[in-house]
Image (cartoon, rainbow, N blue to C red; front, side, top):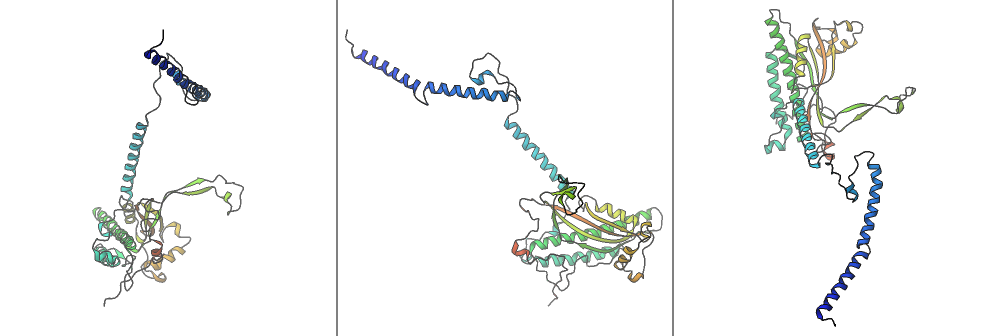
Length: 379
């Protein structure tokens, strides 16, 4: 029986299905046969990797290799990346809080007057703002040490602004203002120590012997510093005799990024033992200096000073005993030279050179050593 139109369409459809199935199976790169071959290659590669994987981790489930298994799928080991990220952020916040707390108790408390006001006139000539502040602070301190009967051989407290230029820039002005605060703070700590010791001796019913003389207070230029550590030198040799050789050093000094701005000040005092102990305790209080760079104590009556008095001879002119004449220190008095340092902190990324790093063209205008600036005479 001849095929009608419907039969022809049905046969044609079957033929197209066969052609498409053959193409889907044998088509290069995309056909089922090619995909099956790629799967076999991937499985063989995975089996080779499994040999090394099983040495350090639990065995992989058979389903990983594309085989049917009734084994129970184990719970995934480890932790989610989101959990680890949250914990990492929390630890960072905790560490940052600890750093902020340590900086808070270590940072010197600089008052508001150490910052230049926003007044346009002051911003234009910041050096004159420092000069006015310095004269006011010096007058206040002079009244205080006279009332407390504390002697001061350096009434200019480390600065000299008579007849000189004060046209330094904002950075240098802010640095000098902080140094002025340090000088002011040192003098007030000396006064406080003397008064406390005097009051204590009076409360005990003994003749007050508290004595304090400020020989000199010299703020030094601030310096950016950072942590350092002694690291064992891997090339060290105990048989090396040449001091210039790298193998002669047992340790190397390793430095990290600077992030601390130190404000050193050198103080020379003549006082009694007890007053100095009170002064030293107050210097180490939170918000004060905390860092003691060096400490030299000299007494003409200490046993260690009997053999060699050359240091005393060099010190006597500085305390007003010229040529061995004048008032010598009493038995209970000592000569003290101390170098202390206040601290502030900065971001080493934003300010890699420190708080007062100027541009190259401005650095040439700044003195490299302490200069006693002087005010111009009035017209």
